[in-house]
Amino acid sequence: MVKTILFLVGLFMIFGAFYADANEKEPPSTVISITLEGRKAFEPDTLIMNLQIKANTSAESEAINIFGSIDKTVRNLNVDYTGGKYSVAKYCWWEKERKRCAGYKGELNYIFKLKELNEQSKIFEAVEKFKDKYGEKINYAVSEPYWIISKEQIRAAEEELHYSIIDIAKNFAKKVSEKLEKSCSISRINYDIDHSRWWGWWRDDIGLYYTGFKTYEKIEAPEPKKEDRTISVKASVDLQCK
Image 1 (cartoon, one colour):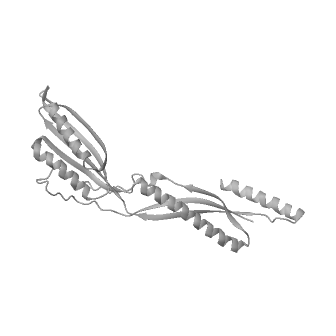
Image 2: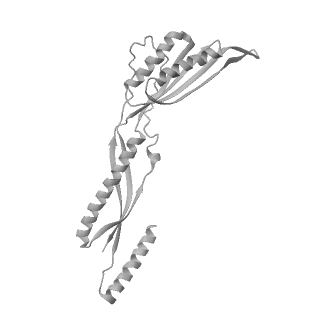
Image 3: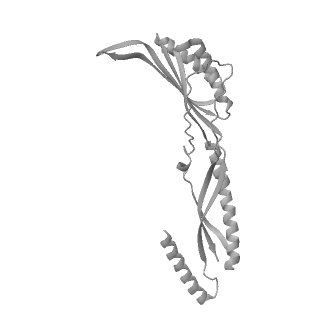
């Protein structure tokens, strides 16, 4: 691509020089290509938390009813989450080449997207009430809470960096105009955005795991550390100077 541009620019300049000699009008134009990059640091704003609730009951309907009550409570907490999927199956195992079954086992899973740290304690306290009510019939686990930068924050940052690059390009064009003693203007801006650089880029891999608490009056869970992340946007810019 670079060779093609250089060839076209050279061809245009030769033609321009010939045209100027013949007609004594516009001088040949010059094309300048540069790469600009804008960066901005952000603090993660969303805590991702995976919650798994397990049930061991003698009847299938009991496990389903427990999950139904928990799900209703979770929905009333007014926190953002996905999931709520569950499964219940007869608990069976092999013993001395014979299949044996006893009761039922079930799982209920959530992925929470929390904006405030105290929301995770609110979830634990709500689930702990059910553990207090049903005893060993249920238990729960939390795996790897971690902070991310939300998509909304990334989109806002990208838009701001787009405008910032335009301002930088305009200032650069002004300085080049002074150096070349020509009038330079932006003829093309091509933004290079690679979302794979930050979708799922910020895991803190803390690996926290909870199996229940003795009291649900007040639960203060550990706080996964927030680390600033830098979002960047690159752009190739062409200037045309006459």
